[in-house]
Length: 74
Image 1 (tube, rainbow, N blue to C red):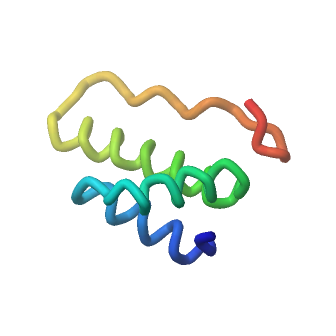
Image 2 (cartoon, rainbow, N blue to C red):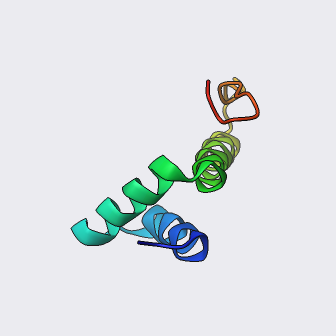
C-alpha cells in the first residue's frame, strides 16, 4: 500500500507520462481511501486546466472544482 508521499509522487509523474498498471492501481486504491491525496489530485487537475487555458490564451475561465464538505463528499 502506498503512503501519501509515494501517492503524490505518482500523481506528479502521471502528469508527464503514463504510469505502469501496478502503479496506477495502487494509486487509485490509495486515493479512494485518502481524502488528502484525493484533494491534492483534484487541485493538480485544476491547476493544469488553468495553466493550459492561460497558455492557449483562452478568454473563458476554467470552471471551479466541485464544492466539497469537510469530509470530501461532493
